[in-house]
Image 1 (spheres, one colour):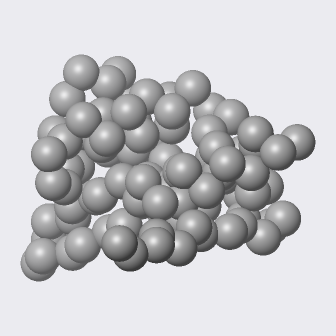
Image 2 (cartoon, rainbow, N blue to C red):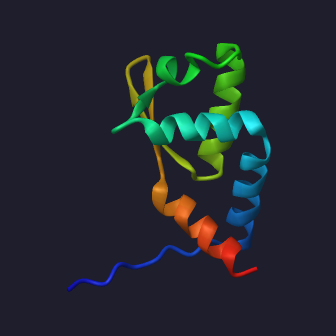
Image 3 (tube, rainbow, N blue to C red):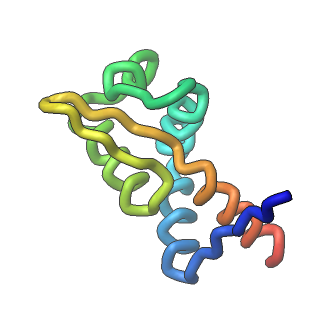
Length: 97
């Protein structure tokens, strides 16, 4: 049986995640990425959201800076993957407050 190592967040990381999730649009974006089986392309994320490509880019940068998404660039295409370990560490930390 292997033990899984839990990620711990610094106070700065906790603050960055809280700020990123404070915007309801970023929360919606994160939910869309979480529903993708592997990774999500920008076009898939933007579909159904009433925001411009520039606004989506800004929100994605905030989620990336918070460590909530991994970014994979393939030429001019960008794919995002939810960092479930970071999200779980955030929830664990919140539960201890």
